[in-house]
Length: 395
Image (cartoon, rainbow, N blue to C red):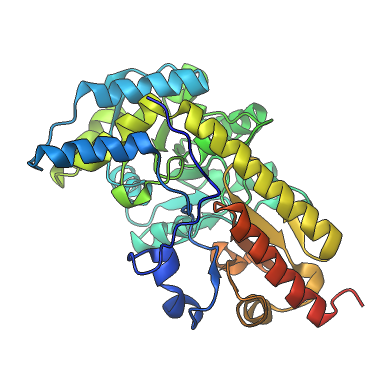
């Protein structure tokens, strides 16, 4: 089955209950913005995914569903084909979403009062989930070198000594950093020495851009793999986050049985009819579509970077190595966070994520979503350029 995507085709998502497009007033106080914040794409989901859903709808009965072997086979084949990772079907299971999966791992494997380690700036739920579940948040701030994020291993080792669980963002969001094998092995070895369980959120891993290679710690040595819980999903990759289709990989038999029993207590492991169908279709037929998407995203990123360097040199792009999110370094504009947010909303007419939402290390930054047609990206950059020049930041 093939799909010939037209990523240039505009789709009006307004009035479709889109969180990204229909929540502008609540989030930004106005609706006359280009929404480039929430991390979903403005492209149509692949034809082969939509057709699988249509075919089931045409059947007419949407009853309780089993999770078929074809679902797990599609996942294990994809992991081997795209990542060279051999996973047994018995080692994975359905979860209704990555964020809920993170919450469930915290609840299952830690106790109230335990310390949870994360690396900030980071996807906001990482910062909220520990305290929302009566645990203590501990941060290992990443170091931004002006181009990419680096890990402060000395700080990580000091803090890991007192933590029970480490939530890894792999690849990193918001920076798009693809961690190297050496970096990941070093993090894992520190965790193992200190008895810290590793939960790796890999929702962006299939969006690793051309020229880069991502790595799952679960595919490393048996010693490391036995201490890693991996959470993955087709949702970002194939633009189906509204279907809440995710899965876990746990190779340690004891941990997997413990987690499955915890899910069963809340009846969360049964699965969702359309989530299962969509994931299976995506993983069975998605290679060519994804390869075309990655090239398109890389070209959008290059366009933004080149435009900034040419026309707005005080705003610098942290070039992502994975995903469609660009971390914009706006510190040289010399605006405080409230003024920076106002500049983007009132003057550039762009709805972006303000950096402080990702932690205090996000001060002076904004996150921009370029997972949209090139015409939208060009319009956004034209708006930003006009606002930038009107302010005469370069004077």
